[in-house]
Image (cartoon, rainbow, N blue to C red; front, side, top):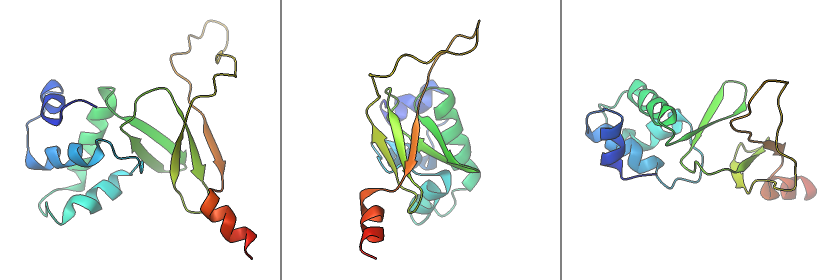
Length: 138
């Protein structure tokens, strides 16, 4: 992701402390946070920040191609600042999301006739090492 101030200016957004905090929290964040998690993490330092500000800022970053939106479960949206081509793994027990390198051994995705594929991302569902280990210990 680019410099926080430049990213906001490019989107035509004012450089408010709240928006700068959102960008600062998201940049390099590998935990794939939801908007609610971003809001909770920044709330103590920015008590006047509205949840709508978080949602709107994240939406604009997604629209600008500076952030990936990941939908791993019904009604759950998470965000990834790594916009490179890669896949994800989702632990169905603890809810963590992991980055995976793209599977280059698979043939390119093809849609129905006349459909031009612009992007294809996979999400693998299962149990992470920690959660699988807890089950094995039972």
